[in-house]
Length: 332
Image (cartoon, rainbow, N blue to C red; front, side, top):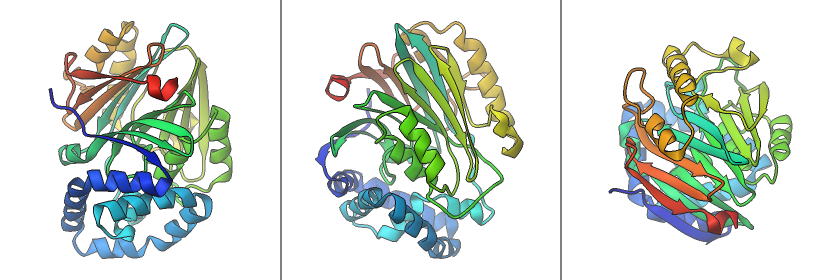
């Protein structure tokens, strides 16, 4: 059974980034080659737009800039070119937004905690750049799925603070110069509490917004955001679903996404019958229309917090394709 590569490393932000870049070097080079070929002459234009975003990120999160520099050096690529892949906002600002039909998040109470499932959706070529990170930086241990070119937090992760983050793409109408959304997600992984994450939302100017489903203990917070607004939906030990459209009052700034709405409705309906890890694997593997496991699904992860285990499937999942990974070294 094929499995994702694993980067196990402990060190500074730069050292961890360097280890990721070195391990994922060829995949990163392949990605950048595809980006340049796809964008053609626009690529240079987009890179020229980066300095204000670099300045904003360096001001608020210099330590994560060290991670990007480490990845770039480890992979042997240019820093600014790699920063581009961590700042998709420049493409959105130029009027060429990419589709937001990515990822499905489901959560069920299990014992006195949560089980969180996440299907990672992007394009099929990105499968080669997805990996498992198992990293300790400044006393925080982080485990999850991520893209080799990106700072950690771009998919689904759990930290030694018992905080889970699963990310969904959203499309919205507002924009501003600020910190790219990937770095907001990265900052959440260093939060000790959900309240720390809210403080970041209050104080750091965002260039755009993700949907962040955060879970810690019995609490689940759904943070829907844009560049200028955010809403936090708070639940405790309740089943929950999120896909790629706004479900809070921020619907008014979201762009229509019928595929996401159909996927959301199906997952929410089926979730009523999900009572076990086995049931969740079957839900995340569902390929009947509207599909939960989609053509662009390139990985699937389930965090079983009560038992301190991660179940991870490479590529499109089937119920018997998940490999178990112990989280005892992360959660204690």
